[in-house]
Length: 381
Image (cartoon, rainbow, N blue to C red; front, side, top):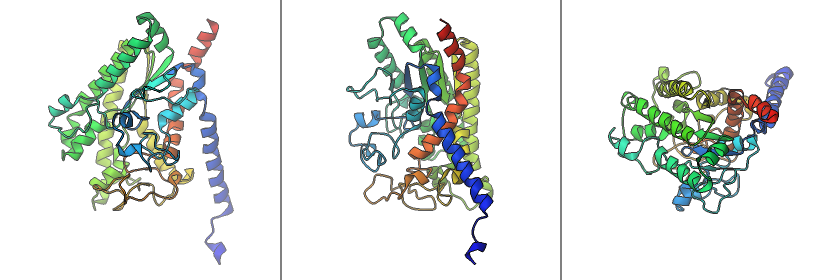
């Protein structure tokens, strides 16, 4: 009788083929950016990309101890169980992992990571004008750009040398801006209220990108926001019995529409930058659709279909996320296999999720970075 409940052989074979295909893509993605001949990568952003600046500044941070970094068997300051998207982007480019700027013993020959957990696009002073007072860090995009300028000031031999070096580098301007909205939402502001902040947040990112171009950057990726309505932190905070509030992936439609609004304005800003700087390559990093692809294909990619929106490290409620008990607290458990989960702590993703998102992203941005043209041109020279 058991045979009547088993999956048809053809179905099982199809699933195995799909999984093998995605494993093949991941393997072949490992060095796709190496043809771009990047000499370095510079990263600005928040906890999505921070490889240790926060814990250098605050050694008592929860990110400085297990279970964060448990896949490494060591906490590195990354807000996950292991690697982040920037790590996989570096691997694809054939560049060592980026050391955090605040690690004075780091290796900075191949770029730097300025991203800081909790960082905002706007400064705390500008956010205060929007009555957003809960800002747990003073590190904004402007502060990171000051760090970048200071670094170039000490490592470059004049502007000409800096322009030459930075012209061979990849600059990641974000993801940034998500925390500007997070702090506003957590303070109790409505979606409509937070929506009024978006143009200024996007303008801040645009001006930051122009400043990076002013340092000699010629190839830049400016990522957008995630579909935040799919994340345990927001699914918990805005949980409702109204079934119409959710889409087919059980994400909150209104919050995802908010992310789309931010991303639409950001893409408009990028289009303006391209017109203003026709000799530079500025590419939109589509984190939104990269994550939706991952969520929609998660069961085929080896993730637990019963826990797609449950935090691996967390406790409480339908999404394994508590608004008062967080990952890293003594009594908060960790799931047995993070590789089967998308969400690590309800806010950040697992290493496996970041790896697959990076795979999607790299394949999306690669042709837009005009690497083949750059390689053929440099070889001709």
